[in-house]
Length: 307
Image: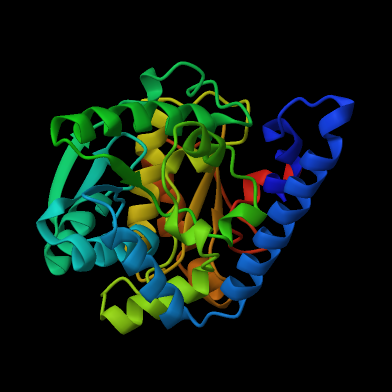
């Protein structure tokens, strides 16, 4: 829909005498776009994968914004398959990266065989980020892309790609505006690949992260408007790590000014309640004042429910 909303911004200014010409151009464009979308929607995941491979192969080199999650891992695997040594995966190590995620990203890059580089990125130092506005992710992504462009320039790489998928665009994604503004290429958006199709492609490629739960950065654990600090990120990170180490698979510890709101899947709630005294004691040691369990269970992006 963004294409249609922005359509008139790319139409040239016209006078009365060329109205018919522009209308004709516009209708041809719409017909072409509609035909393209019909073809894309009819593609199987394997056909979409082959289309992405062919598209990547036409580029001289690519840099992949690589988190080690299933989306960026599939992109990295496809880029390496299409371009070999002319592809590089870059992971940003930062205070908002969950404990253990950097090591997991390194392991997946090694599994794929792609060249992997780690950079440090200080989101908290990025103007507009720590204040945690509704468009926080825009500021983060904008700054990160600038750092990735420096790396791309050093390696004489012309194309940066990242793993936003068509399912993501149904949700609150202010970071995607920065991606579009900076001219970053999104194969999954171009070929309308859904999250489930990405997992299917990952299984076909034999990637170990095919069923890995999504892991948003730790800044998503704070209500909009609540300042994000290094200490708060630390306590959220160690709290989630504590629960993961005890077998809880999908975990979010939301930090409401020092009150922990734990989100887990409903089927694991009874087990958590059986551990409530130990969990509460540990969370208070981590720096939380109170510890609560969200009865609604895990929801991706639950902080967006107030928007």
